[in-house]
Length: 278
Image (cartoon, rainbow, N blue to C red; front, side, top):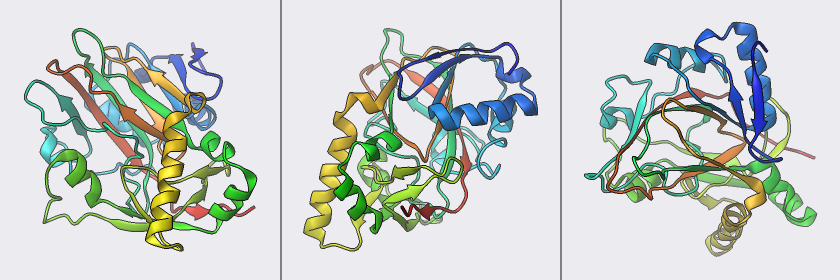
């Protein structure tokens, strides 16, 4: 790739890439796509992109179809392909305050998301943490991994609306409820990964509710408590961060109230998901 320098954030996940995305060729984007498959999270400081350029980047990933989130209608973006992520002194919540994967309730979930930071809080804060679901799975014992291979889980799109956004799902755009494998085969890397998250996963289907609750509590705690699976992004104005939404989970820190943080997110629909079979 032309004129690129890169520094890993941790050995496991995340890299800072110094590259002008506005000048990227198709060959450059193919290299970035491969790099994203390896590192899962890429941070590009000091970008100067129009909204149309931001959207055009997304078409190099996943199916090339931009994801349209119902939240965009409430975010003030005036563009169904762009979600404005904003929290300020008037906010009752901030999007992404708990560990989650973006819209895992969809039949074809988001493959890649790209968040472009417009305004960081004046006194710092607002970091985003990411966790590798490849490494979270590898951190489980072999017998537990084998048991999870045969299981599926229900992902319910109503959960973050009511529990996180603080509003009911739009009645004219029903939320998705989809059953996915607990262990996925990544459609590009073919690696197995753990596919449950606290934002959307409601129930493991093949066991009792009591067993499901305990299994999910254990798996989610396993993801959240282990720093070696994680990296932290300290945002700068005009930084764009892209992440593999299938291979990661993330959480945003709302530690800057009543200051303002504003970003714009573009996401790309992924292919149909398949279970991993060893």
